[in-house]
Image (cartoon, rainbow, N blue to C red):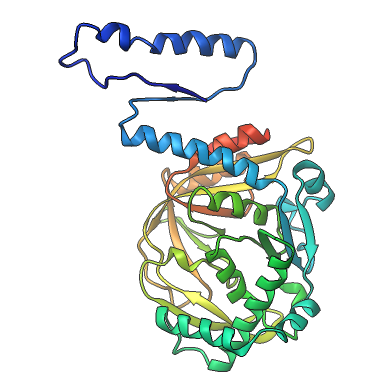
Length: 360
């Protein structure tokens, strides 16, 4: 890391010794030219130290360095097995272990059911009261609410026993005994655990490091709005209530192949810029990150859609965005981070030797 800075910010009212004190930028040019020629990796952050933008870039770069370390040596819990046929996140667990030191542990349905029996009623009631204080829970029955809180606390306990930093589940393997743990997956994300849907361990591993950079959540590109250049972001029932603009409503839905009701969070998302990041296998057993900045646009909750959802708009037209995204092989599962964290992602990719593709 090279800081290209000077003591003074402007030529205005320069003192007699200004030239000697503030001519260092050409020294940085000399140094980086030599480093480039010798194949030494470096990053330059340029500007005056008092500038907010300079300090933001510097802190984002440092966060990217930290994120590169946090991606490695993780433990990810999985309920079920990865969804067969979803090739964009298909990667052998042994490759993740060898390449990044990421361990994958099974948290099967039976283990969750057993752990549910150890959860105290007082713990459940404490979290239920918190939900009642922060959300509108009038649309769900108390026993369904308590059952999902119990499942969440059980899964969290199983993850914490293994010092796990992320979790993924495939709803195809949660057919009965407990509801599909949408509430648990949402609550875990709100605590900064990584998450990936359908047994996506790779995307789940991205959540922990990115939450060290900015508030980040799992999501999926779902439906296009060609007329308004928007994309509907949604999944089955998982979300992150930290992204709510205002009131949160607790609802319920059945878990597809599971006939039990699952509690879900519904809310309008806070508008503003976000960064998306897709981590997928690349060519020749390497990996790549495809990333860019989108804008969450103001939108009411859509009654036609049962699960959590919101709308984003690319900076270019939707058609161009989707064509560029497909051209570099971005996956359908992504992480969404508040603000512009592209510098952190570029830094992380450089350190981990990932391909990095930025989509405008």
